[in-house]
Image (tube, rainbow, N blue to C red; front, side, top):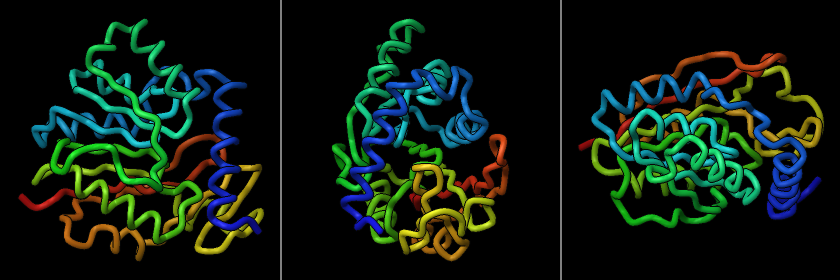
Length: 220
């Protein structure tokens, strides 16, 4: 069983290799959560969006095309390079900036500097419960009052929960891909001090993956 640091490095290499071998692996169409998020962000009056775990950028590019100013982060330089190439091709490079960032580290942004944060299946990566809480604490720090966080995570009802290699703390590795499966108690704990607007169950992909889409806002 790998320790936290070793597991993190293994997963970092996994994603670098994956994006190199399969450029644009998720296609060009935005995810369903991103389409929902754009509407929620617009309704909340958000103008600038921080996407965590943007990968090669299908959702970040969508937000930029929808008129938002976007900062996209990922710990894979390869994924972000593909994102920048696509932004230039689509003519949205002026509205989109990229930063290589590991979600385990503090965000390289000032306090209260963004209106909205989007994270599709980022918080359920190979992160410990402590690291997930720290990441949400950083999100809270950089959001302006009234700011909105919309994230998705695989949950304990997913078919891969309890399958493969156990790493403890809710993390299971299957096919080289480690996931922290969320239970409802963790969702509620992460919303402490926020307004929890929605916990929406949905499915994605061929397995299918079973996820929650969670929306929460900071008090003004």
